[in-house]
Amino acid sequence: MNQFQSMLLAATPSTGSGSTLLKFVTDGGVIGYLLILLSVIALVLVVIHAIQIRKSQLVPDEQIDDLQELLSRGSSEEALEYCLQPVNDSFFTRVLAPGLTRFLRSPFGAFEIKTAIEDAGAEQTERLYRSTDALGVIGAIAPLLGLLGTVYGMISAFSTIGGGGGGPTNHEQLAANISLALVTTMQGLIVAIPCVILYSYFRNRIDAIAADAGGKLDTLTMLLESAQAPVPDSNSPSGRIAAATAARSEGEG
Image (cartoon, rainbow, N blue to C red; front, side, top):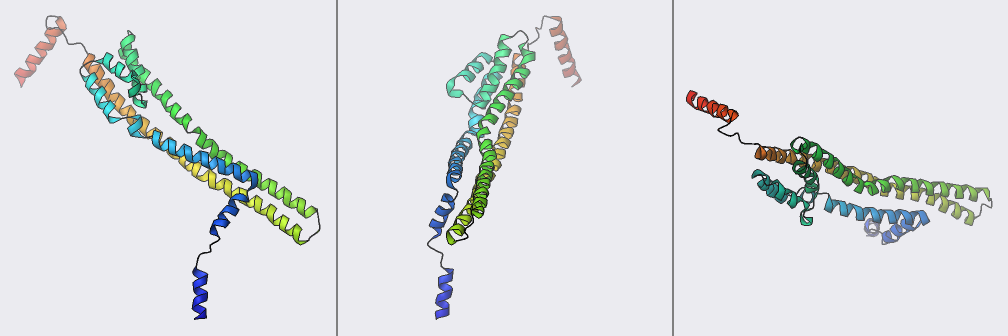
């Protein structure tokens, strides 16, 4: 029975796990608290990016349907007004609006619309990239802060050894300095690794959304060009040629 009780006590989790976690946090000192602050900021940024960098937010399907309907009937002016309305502000409309503006305002707009859309798309994509830079900076700074704590702890440890004495107090101080060196390194890595992973993830998501938006913009551009294409006059030479060609095709059929 005593053996069973000993095994049961050994399998029971220690009630001091919470205090151990708190000790791990506080053992990092000032640098540990800085890393905790960075981790909180990183968490807030991750939540914001997870909400904002979504296809439903950047390339809404309802906007694509509305613009497709407008451009299919040649209402490019209405499509531009639709893109410029604040309620319709999105990555997709911010990219399409400069192209429509160039198409309507420039005498060579039909040839410049794709260039304008590509330039606006590159600008808006870079803007999204810049919004994730803070997460990447935290991922780069956190290991450096951990390394700073490591260097400080080792310097303090060697200072303790150089002070001599060798008493219990000296040994405890040496252990505390070495603990600081190791704890800050681990804290820096715990903060940095998720930040680097999520930073790459969000940038890849931006690339995927931008590529999807590019395909839809090409479709709308072709739709706009086909809607704006002039219909040949049946009394003009080109119109008579087109009519004769169509009649010959029907006769051969």
